[in-house]
Length: 374
Image (cartoon, rainbow, N blue to C red; front, side, top):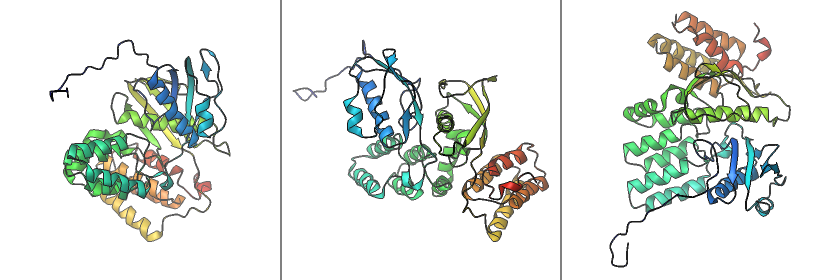
């Protein structure tokens, strides 16, 4: 407002501003993998670099092998101490580098601390309007934050507006660390809210699970929900190619990658375009830990009965999601996988790819995997 209490119109101009390149969709700290060109005179470029440095310090990411400053080799400090990094930041020049991920599948330890959750809840209670509360949660969900299911449920109770609840829940779809966590969140919401979330995010986004992303994907790169799935899949691919696992074994393999029907080579330097249809087959080849235990007999039979009921509905999406949740939550034996495949055959399901899809889903969850050939 002006001195006389009247509102003044202020104009923000970006004319002649110098802005570096951080990808076609801007910088997202939750999905930082990519190739960067940062003009170090530009304030926003400095913000991006500092965000990346924080990820490195937290040991969730790393700079690629050949960064350059104005075309000459540039070396980031090998230390993970924040002060060591900030002392060596260039104040000018074009800084070019590749950023790689060191993150694995989100675990419980990656979730928001309950003490921080309480701070957020206190801030929401002090907010002056529902709009301000929704905006606060939107900011939190757009950062590199993961949640436990019970944390999302507590935050949802603070949002009385159904549209705000839908918006926040869908933003948490891939940020709940428990394999079945987001399904528990959906079960607490009304049918109309759940239907709205599924309608908004589409099939690809709703079937992606970080703990077991195996399967075939058709992803619309112009879709705001499909695009992050591509970034997550590529992040896991980059993690594999960076050779960060001590035993050198790949965790996930991306096969048959195409863009608009044409084969595309997806390597560490591939820039994800902002439009087009990206298709890929993902195979999870990580083996279960030595102490993994298969589903108990009674529990497995209960799931098998539920699968038989779903097969009768002839709804392929429901069946796929059920199998996916099962494959993310439990380890199985070869005999149990055989029983699952037999149930699909007996159900005379018309979807021809359901049997191989089910096998791919459970492939990395088989404890006695030496018998897979049988």
